[in-house]
Image 1 (spheres, rainbow over the protein chains, first blue to last red):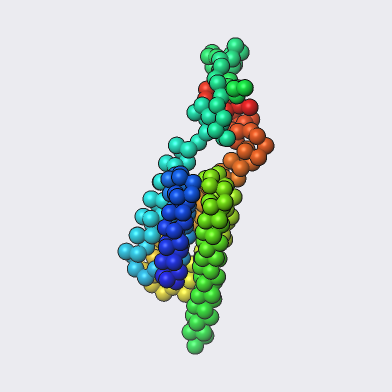
Image 2: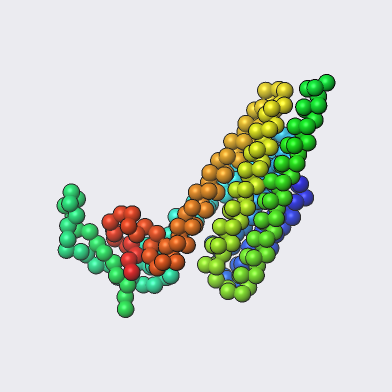
Length: 111
Length: 135
């Protein structure tokens, strides 16, 4: 099964390289690489023999979660662009929200 | 005699279940890798990968379930505390990973649904704040 894990790792590297070349997005390439590396780690986890291997697998999985969370956090829409990348303007609403005492804002897409 | 027989039967079952789990994960990874390459070359956009990533996540979660089942079965015949401790650590890692995978799958699905009906995923969940997209 270690051979299967190595095969998936090789596929992960290949997919990441192809994605980087075709889309030009390093973020998408990194995500796909991490997804497939997790798959490889899971296959390897089936044949672990000692605590060192286990700790290594745990570190890889934890690292992958951290990087994924960082990517998700910075890739969220809502900072001036919509999901499809359309520009929006932010305008201040006149209405006040109960209990807050401050005006809320609404945004609308540009025409 | 009976204990030895039970031990052997459990070992065989554990091997079979773990192999099925590994096969599911391997199959999913190979399928997803193929789709990633094809979609990447065809569309040249990172957005088309999300459905494939969701499916890969399902494959991984399913494979993990099988591996967890094998872990559980293995605890039935683990004689030493050392082996039990290792099993517990592996099961903990797999359970945590399963949880994170399911959560990511839910988030990706929500994102896809939000893009599908033309609204932001946060719509309806809270008052619209500064910088939130509204169509």
